Length: 110
Image (cartoon, rainbow, N blue to C red; front, side):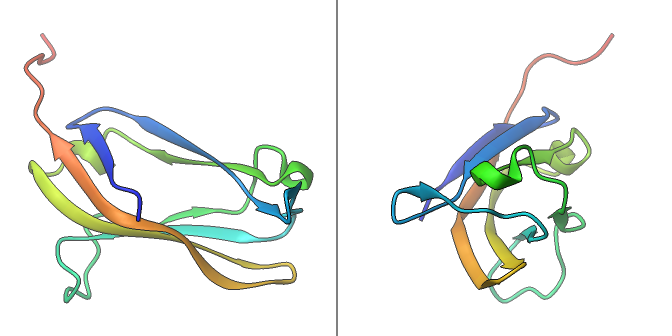
């Protein structure tokens, strides 16, 4: 499990690298999906799933998932997330999961 923390209303990019046996895993054609829920029992997502099909450096196993200011503009608190990758010869696999905590900010736009 990997817990994530982000300040409410901030944009955040998470850079991921996939390897197999210590070597980069070619993720060309694979889809990475991040889902966030208020509780594990919920069926509704907090914001639409983040779906990544265009990767930073796919032959080197590198991709980026970006949460926008709209995604992180939800009420303060802890949510549950997971990230799964599948396709292009990769069987569906959960690669990260844990709590996503949205913390407070004091600065507001003028």
